Amino acid sequence: MHICLQLAQALPQLESFTYSGRICHQFFQDVGRLVDPDRRGNMKLKSLDLTVKNCCRPGFVDGSGINDPAFIAALESLVVAGVSSLNHLKSLTLLRIRFIDLESPMPLLNPFFQIKDNFCTGLWSDKILIALATARPAASFVELSDDFGGISYDKEGKVVPGEKTRTRPLSMKVSSYEAFSTVIAIN
Image 1: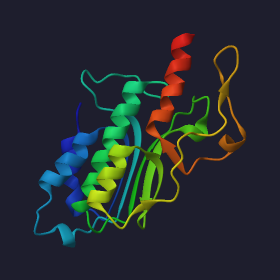
Image 2: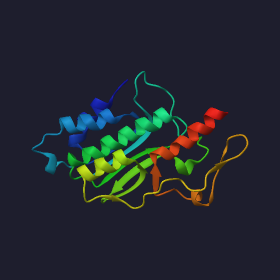
Image 3: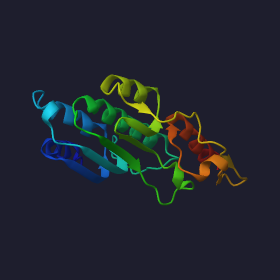
Image 4: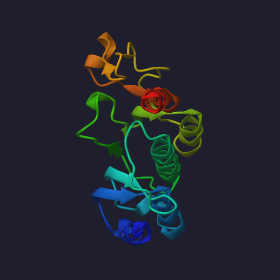
């Protein structure tokens, strides 16, 4: 069931929203469409926290994970839409979108995006940076890194963490996830 519109309809009356489940970029597009332009500065919503189990996609594909390029692309679209919605959600000081895969070979590399008090961490791409510059020009990333740092693979294609991957990265470039789909495809 696609519930993104129903979730968006509840948002203007809330001060804080936490959700865990299937969601997609349509949620934020619906929020932008439903928010009364005269109330944008008066909205109460300060915190929006989404834990993504999967992203709605055509046919409601069940696959999700860092090794699924279609899921990573859908998650990027969700983040772009979320960042773009910041111009509708003026009072929002915390936006967190995260994917938690308990079976991930590298749990620290589970993708996330967070903006708190105009400081961003997590998932980034050119699309996300453009949306951020447009919707909230005062916001910026704490760090932008092109890779996760030191990841290699053993003979079976399992991820071997490097020195820098022992802690959660402050930035995760979307294109860096392509390495995971390549290794899985070889096996």
